[in-house]
Image 1: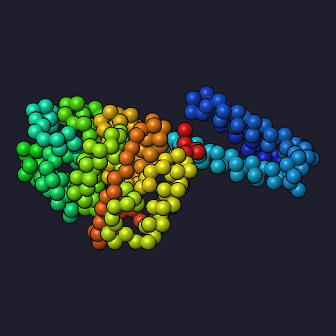
Image 2: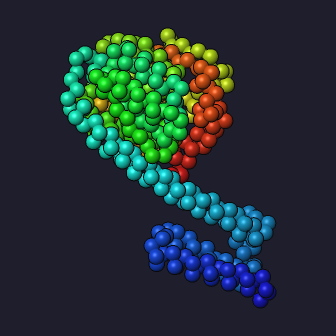
Image 3: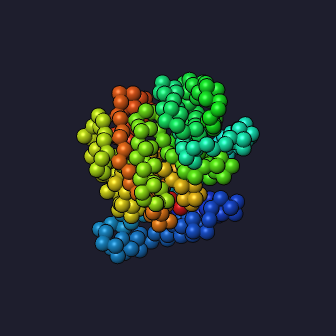
Length: 364
């Protein structure tokens, strides 16, 4: 026996013992234990009999038996990388749930009396705006003004761990419009757009009846959306009954101001990929401007922290066979919204695409 064979055998034995120890401590499931045990045993067997390794390699059309070990190691590394990534992702989701639950409970306890005593007076009081914000101190005050001036009275602002003066601005607006129902749910740390929406969705799903609302409105705090489009939404709602109404930048009547050609291409690709992976026929799958009935909202469960939440939403619309109607909207790509430090860059679309593949194929 050569020194190399001896080292390989010892390493394989340690590998097996490590697997047994992890299994006993319930840090590993049965499948992983079998992989550890079988892999270690195979390495020991091949170390004793190299001809057997060569024969095994030829069975797979490989010139050298050692190539089997190389490819096998690559597959195992990829497998365990995915397992670690899954565990990391689950831990992130758990942290988000804890932060979200805390924000929901604190907001309700603070606003309970206001929620119960607020009385609807117009049709627009049936709507509540879900406004997620992160470092939007420059513009969020103006966005809240636009919503209130348009005749709407209910806004849930989710402050996703902003580091600027966002909290001060929205608290000032809450005092300014004390006769309206403006609620603030604050995350202790930044968790992402999907996490902020989870908090908003779950708060409204839980307290929607007390809030006396029928419709949820997804709205952005960066000034890109036009509150006047709510007139189009409401007109469409009266003419076409549906579970939800989705704003689209790509149907007749829609307008986009200062949208770059690169952004148009990326959005077109995202539409194609969403159709392939999720079966959704929505023309603008990443539009945040949506009006959803309370009953339909309660069928939606979001998990993603980041912008992948839009894909989750489209998937659940398709899976739950929700009836939807698309509505033309106007989107204004201002210098602020396109250059802001934390705004999604075009290159991040690649990351979002990879996350989509991971979540659809590998995450469990």
